Amino acid sequence: MSRLLGVNTLVFNEELSEGTVQQLTYIKTIKELGFSFVEIRREFLRNLTEELLETKTEAERFQMPLYYSVPSVLFESREINPALTTYFEEARMMGAIQVKVTLGDYHDLQENHVESLAHLFKQYPDIQLSIENDQSIEGGSAKALSDFIFVAHSHQLPI
Image (tube, rainbow, N blue to C red):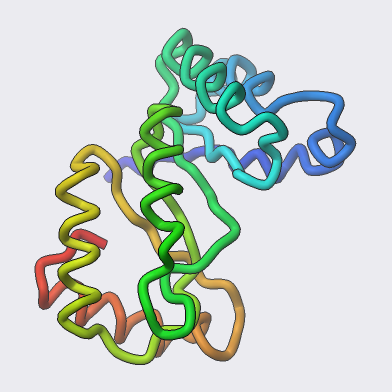
């Protein structure tokens, strides 16, 4: 069984935080080192639209798949985060195949949540949603994550 290994640009935190380089600068090196994908972090994008498009061009040049890590939540005040569509649109602009957020304020998956997510996935069929552990008590516990994933899968949501 082969596993895909990628690089989250957070490993370049110091340089990126200083604002002296853009994340797309590292795509060539990451590809040359043999990694399978690059995870671009939203918080390091300074000129959002311009950098999304430039990053897409650079990733296509090196045939490097992109994941998009967004420091935000899926559930905000027990509802689907209204900014989620914006994040998926940004991912589409960049050519990313995945958007990653944390679970957030999840308590139960209601029918309106299922409909909202199903609509989003239909609108962006080439982009997957990934939920990461944020280490918080509310949405970061193994139980909260596994409960959500189980319920999402029971509704045929590809999470």
